[in-house]
Amino acid sequence: MKPARKMTLAAVALASLSACGNGSEDETGSGPLGVLAQTAQQAVAARRASGQPTAPEKSPDERAAEALRVNPGPLILAGFESLGKTQIMAMTGQNGGTRTYMTPAEEALILRGGMLVGTRGLGNDLSVAEPETEALIRSGASGNGQRVMRYFSGDGLERPLQFNCTVGAGGKPGVIVESCRGHGADFQNSYLVQGGQIVVSRQWIGPALGYVTVQTLRP
Image (cartoon, rainbow, N blue to C red; front, side):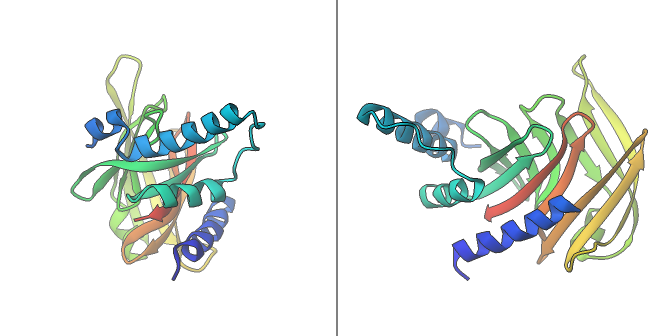
């Protein structure tokens, strides 16, 4: 299947879910973040130099296609619902199965096989998530488990919140839903799993940041 076709199918799945360590390279502009930033900067500079008006902002699909063209590394498309913005994020580090994806502004998502386990640079960050339900979700099984979400507080300490969760099939074919409750909050995560990897998802970051939708552009 061609990359463009894969991206289109993943975008459709993402819409359905919404409804329900390379620092030195990046500093010199040769790393994944540098490529993303330079591409945007060069395009703006070229238009200004020629006296052309600034073009309308590209759609997420157009920006994803451009990022795939110029950046050979792993990429995701992340939509932050409460912030009202969609970001293309490049992998900047990997530790075993855990990857850090970052924007040029150093806003980061930390994913383990597509499962959100932390954020950085967004404010009200999720320090780490510890989901007992992960194995159920990856296998497509039903069951119950706890989820611990640790958040950075104003004093710099981690504050854990524990939620009771139920995992089962969603309303769309192939979609797994994780419904959680605790501390006066109710949230529902949705996952599209392929070969044990979460390729498209809608996951709750926390009370302040709400949901993020994540689509794998290039694994």
